[in-house]
Image (cartoon, rainbow, N blue to C red; front, side):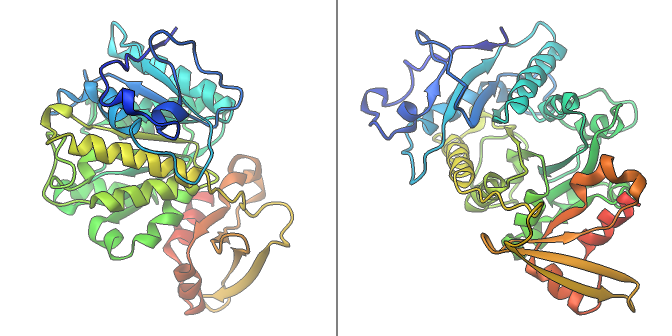
Length: 387
């Protein structure tokens, strides 16, 4: 068995939980109880107490139970989602054993269409979650909220600062697109930025994102998995990280991003990493992560199931010719949610492999840009990858 039970007896205010407290609403794999019934579960929380490959953030392995302590005290909102807390991945004799266990558990959940919320631990665990998609044998999109790209240097072993190189080079490769949300230029080597552009990956500077947070929604909606590095949140809002910086997202912006993730019909895995309770101030960061989990669940409860496939009667279709009629871009707007997608043509030979990626989530701003005879960046990068 890869999972160990949670000892909740030391959690704060357990005796004061109300029926609507998440500690009573969530089915918990706690000491003295049976393993949660997953037959009706839609979301599963998994803790991972692993930090052996953390860089400059020793202490993050104790994060999961600190977050649970605050999460269980929150009240259920105006939503009903069956959530199970499966406990913590048993730490392996070697770090590779922990990677394998996490990947295996996530893979089984994905097969059952249960969304895992991973609370780490260090961010190299993102690689394990990526590997869990391998058994599904489909190309995926990945989004990371982080101040850097974590590519490492040539020959570097897998750790929290090099996991992206391992993902990009992994064979067989199932990564179609990577999006970084909120990188800070002084933390990014120019060569790494050039590589991202050559691979037609989507990278967005912190200032660009903060200027219009609504534009984060289509980025996240395009992802199958999201990895959130807590050091991307400014130190004043989330001090519980040894790599925290004065600049970054505000706490409410972090909650907004994960709510967008919850709303996405496509996203089926989210991980919150690098929280270090040893550096926290009055459990401030634990509170924030608990609220982020709450917002993800709340967003999940409002999913619209309106990805534009099959019957198109619930969508408005727009055709825009750009570049002197060289390209026609077809947009779809959902009547349910007012969300936008754009169609990207692809060769017939690639139809089966890439059929999940020819409808690209976008925003009204992308439609406006096309109407001004300018190809949206999202459309162009997807087009180059497909062709």
